[in-house]
Amino acid sequence: MELAPEKFKQFFPLPVTVITTRDGRGVANAAPYSCVMPILRPYPLIALASALPRHTLQNIRETGQFVVNVIGRPSFRDAMRTARPYPPDVDELERVGLETVPSKRVSPPRIAAAIGWVEATLEREVTDERYALLVGRILCSEINDRYLEDGRLKELPLTLLAPHFRMLGDVLADREELESELTL
Image 1 (tube, one colour):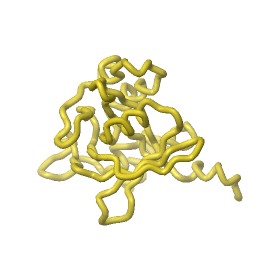
Image 2 (image 1 turned 90 degrees about the vertical axis):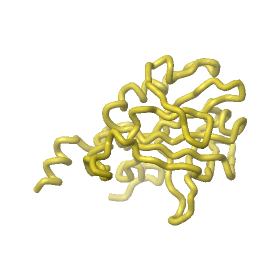
Image 3 (image 1 turned 60 degrees about the vertical axis):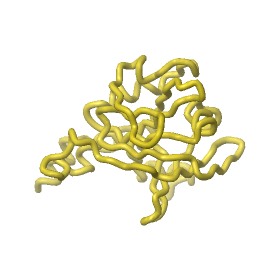
């Protein structure tokens, strides 16, 4: 079945992340982002796409720093509440009650319940009248110890994230269905 070019997302699932930033005055910001990807192994680079204008984009331009928080259970619903249109001077993390922990190499906080974090600094931006593509240099990446047992993930990354992938705004897969297929 051929699709219109913009409909490829129907079969191209994207994990949900929340990007945390700080503005120049130190006010924290958080927003869900699905268009995040690594850039070619082994380079320590990560890319994200942002619509114009967004507080997250403005903050990254202003400070050059951001954290990609990989979201799954149990913080998914609370993290998605950061998507509401808060004014720029509101700390969304505090407003929605998400616990944070300090980052190791950048100023923006980490979401404590995230599966993992990628701390980065802005290396390059490509801008068009509708969007910006940002390339960040990864300074630190870490898996949350809450999800580890004996130095290994307690669950497969796919089940940790499921059903928290975006596919044109719909849930891609039911967690129970995936787990039953993995045990067959």
